[in-house]
Each structure stands twice: as structure tokens, then as C-alpha cells.
Amino acid sequence: MKVTVNTGSISFRLLEQSASTVAESTDRLFVAMLIVCGVMAITLALLVLWFSIRYRAGSDANRDRPPSHAGGLEAAWTIAPLLLFLGLFVWAAHDAVQARRLDQKALPVYVVGKQWMWRIQHSSGRQEINELHVPVAQPVALIMASQDVIHSFFIPAFRLKQDVVPGRFTELMFTATELGEFPVYCTEYCGSAHSAMLARVVVMRADEYSRWAGEHAAQRDETWQMGRASYERLGCASCHSASSHVKAPLLQGLYGRRVQFDDGSSTIADDQYLRESILQPRRRLVAGQPPIMPSFEGQLDEEELLALVAYLRSPGASGADIDDPRAPGSASR
Ligand code: CUA
Image (cartoon, rainbow, N blue to C red; front, side, top):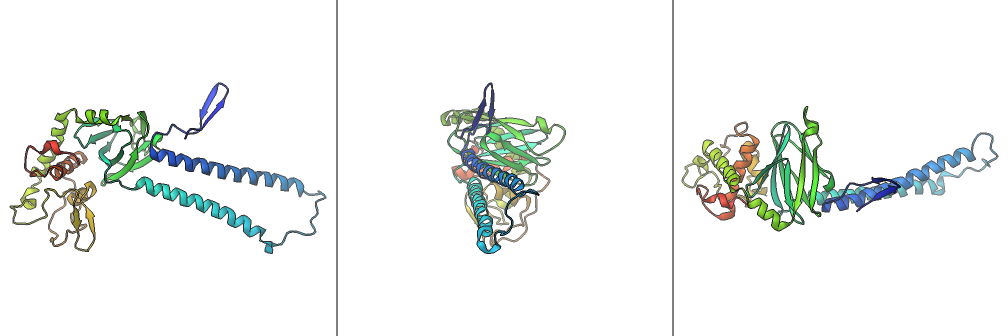
């Protein structure tokens, strides 16, 4: 939606260019709220003005028969705006839930915020700094973590903003609708160079994106190697392999599968779950497993953690053995 006010030589844009599916619904809601609140404010201001002139001290207005409270007029002007604003609330809540719904088919892109840059890693393994390349008209899920303090990833043209918090993944879903470049701002004060923590989103055609993401195979192998190095350094295989006596859950092909917990609940083994299992393994226990896995909190930085999760993800897609060194090509969902 485009709302532009043109006053001679000065062009003033009421709304920033919109370039995502979320932006369109957000703008509709914003304009509706602006109209409702604007009409309300003007109506009330005019009534205040009119009443203060009509019933000013010394005016000849008839004050003999003030309207009664029982007439229903008062109830009407209380209940009608209440319903109107509750309607806006329901509309906004619906849009917010829609925008947050995780699309399992969305293209995952990993974002690490740190003082003072954004490090982006695509599921193809390609990495970039302060730039985020995405395909147009395809759902994208940003999976974000912070290396140090709280940052916030804000894409005004997409009308989306999400805090990036140390110690956990946060997610942001969108589908870009316009080709081009759009600025990204950090909107959480994160230190002296906070205002310089800028990036941009580059929206490309789908075929261009796949070509772009496929380049730099060296980076992909680097990520996979980094993940594999952590896997070996931390000794994951000593419990999580088929030959281990511990009989911990096998990691091979785990990604994307349903995991059953001993309290009866279950979840799909996604990035968030793998992260939680590495850092807080006893938070949710896999059914039938004793609580023996130690936490690896503090032993991996965010980049190593992302690489390890990427490494764990890789065999699930290809069916290859997790110890198979030929697996790097499979580092996608
Ligand atoms: Cu990062 Cu402000």
C-alpha cells in the first residue's frame, strides 16, 4: 500500500515502501487505525469546542432538562467505541499470530548478531556480513542468536522487527514481495557503535538466489568442518553413536523427526531443539533416557554452535552417515 502526500515541491511519504507480505497487512491495519483514531479525535475535539461555546457562562442555552442517564445514549457512546477498538485488537492479534507462524517449508537463514555486525549464514553454507540475500516470493525463516548483548533486527520495508537475544534462538518469518535492496537497522541499544550496526537485505529472483547461494563452496565446507571439529572435540559420538554402550539417542537423521519426551509431550527436532539439547540437555528428557548428558553451555560460541547444528542437520537430509566426510554437500534442509 502506498500513501504519499504531495505538497508542491516537497513529497512526504506517510509510509515507508512495503516489500513483504507482512508489510501489506501491517499497513492496512495501520491506515485503518489512523482513520478510526483520526475520526475519533476530530469528532471529540469539535464536540469539546462546540459544548464550551454553547454552554459557556452567561449563554442563553436552555439548561432546564439535562438528558437522563437512563436514556441509553451514554451506554451507546461507551459500548460502540469499545466494540470498535476491540475489533481493531482482534484484527491486530490475528495479523501478529499469522506473521509469527512458523512455516516448515521456509528457507532457513542463520543470523548471529555481535558488537557490531550481523553475520549471516545460509543453509547452503554461504556466509556474508551485514548483507542478507534472499529470494523473492519464497518464505524465509531467520533463525537468530546473539554472541554478546541484546540486539534487534529491524527491516522497515518488511515491517518486521525481532530482538536477538544471547542464550537462545529467536525467529523472524517473511516473504519478500519486491526485488531490490532494503536497509536493516539494529534497534536495541547495544553499545558505542550501535548506530553503525547497519545492514541491508538484497531480494533476488529465485534462480539468481540459488546460483548465488551455491557459490563459495569453500565456505560451506568450512562451516561443516567447524561443526565436525566441535562434534569431535566435545566427544558427541562417544554417547550418540550406534556402537556406544551409553545408547544415547542417535543423532543421525534426527533433524526434522518427532522426539517423544518422558512427560508425554513431543516436538519436532529443529534448530531450536538441537540448541536446547546441547546447552540444557536436562530441560526436556527424551522418553526412556536417563538424565546423564552434561550441559555444553560456555564451551561453544554462537558461531560454533550454529556450525555444530548445521553439521547435525546435514546427514538428516542426505541419509548419509554422520561420520561420512562426503556429507558437506548435504548441508541443506
Ligand atoms: Cu546491535 Cu544495537
